[in-house]
Length: 396
Image 1 (cartoon, rainbow, N blue to C red):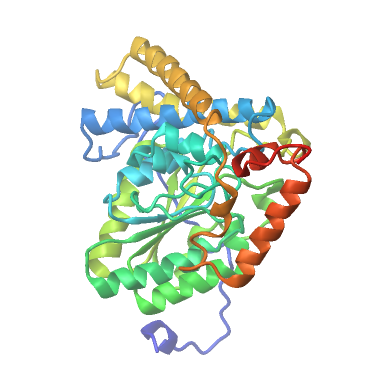
Image 2 (cartoon, rainbow, N blue to C red; image 1 turned 45 degrees about the horizontal axis):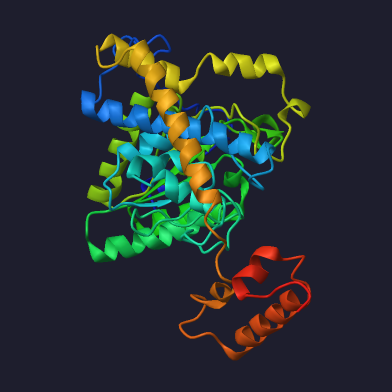
């Protein structure tokens, strides 16, 4: 039993839920200046430019991804506009061997680690070169080579998985950690609480990174929980916690570095709550005008994380407005070229549907595939791509 649990009192003393309010760690102002008494993290020009270029590519990827969905070229898309400092910044603070278990808005981490535009587009179009063989809906990326677990649609499933994976890392003693990224809405799932309790009890090297962007689809934070955000919850599980300005790239970088030290060197879990805002819709299927105002969005557009980092880099003489224009135009062209290339790649062969499920396809899967092929053969005009792959022609 803990020392605190043994401390006795002799009159009823209740502690209010709002008795403790966690401050927000900030380093960089929107104009590019540092806050008074803020310490500059260890970052050089090369790292700063790599981070900023990854943020810019992520934004262009999102811009063209949504436009393509609106054009009917993609079935679905999710943007991370306004949250790039979180999604790129935390990845920059990790070792490349650390495992990332993301939710579905962390494409910036993949960009930073080197996931190519071709790989992004192959997944979005579910073509034959897609690592997932076309079995996932768009934006469900994954890369074993880059230690990025494939995205799962259901909320919070990755949080307890991260605890388990980190336990394996602790047993292996390889000096690596796992980062589970999720939104504040996912923190309302039971998996969140089970994962944090298990991580604290087992003392594993895991970082729980909550991207608090203010909304769980259309539900504002004020209707999700009554407490002081997500960070205080970690205290109930006896773990380290910090709240940071998620639009401040330097705060994200430094906080994640320090969290990683605690996780790896002390084998203890850490919770980071990054305060940000989802400038875009929840997904291409969402219309945010139904639940938030343009005035609210404009307020947060003035806190654009890319603009903030650009202003700081210009002050360091590491960047210029001209370079900025050239970068975004170049990235836009690269994204469009990769998209056109991926569109021309054929869909996966129907036989791929049952590979990799078991070491050897089971009889019932083979039977189902045979029935599917028979159906396609009867109606080739309805499934032209699959029929072409199988060599079926209309009228045969």
